[in-house]
Image (cartoon, rainbow, N blue to C red; front, side):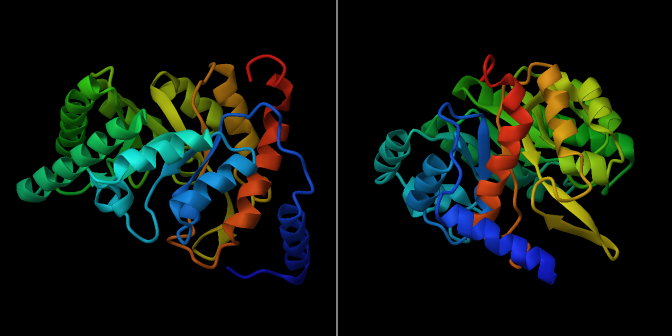
Length: 306
């Protein structure tokens, strides 16, 4: 990601402010979280410490130290998970979501069964950690007709929800890939027909790729939204370049306001995709800046709801 002189100066100032804690986090924590996708070099202890010190209430587990298969991490092995749970509890930070890589569109029977089995491993981990959600993908409209793929994704979501419900976990499908428009997501969630299936609204994708305004998406899908990914970007050639919150073209404030209007109770989670884009600014700069901006967006409600 290229940074001009003006942005470099602004970034340097932000980094200095963050390093000196020049701003004050709210005394009562707002429902803010960040995904560990944004801090791939941080150990769990540092993640929890940083979240606690910088005004976050929760983190979303999406990989640790380069490993996306969270259930295989040493921190979550049977002989260590009790200690890990104590560490998390002592920090006061909640686990907002445990995010898997399961793709429910897959047509190949063997790969599909393996993907769902992997997703259930994440459900088991979420149950152990007391996390409410496990993320899955619909992902691609390929491997059959649209009707066949929608039916396959909905059936997989229902199967996982049937497994997760008795364990106190809800499976949430992310608006991602080819599943970024309200009609498609609504059809999947309606067909899945489970109180233990919901939506992870990646608000960037429904706006940029689904070409929907936040008010439309929330009006259509709000009843299913359980968790939210927020991020900002600008056009960059044939693609997009992620930028600091409020510095791009994505209407993040309007997304927040649309959620507030329906009484959304979940976390506002910052997904800074540094794992996939290592040239992004460091989490020590981007994470506190997200809290600063979001504190402003949520300020009007701090005296009551939060």
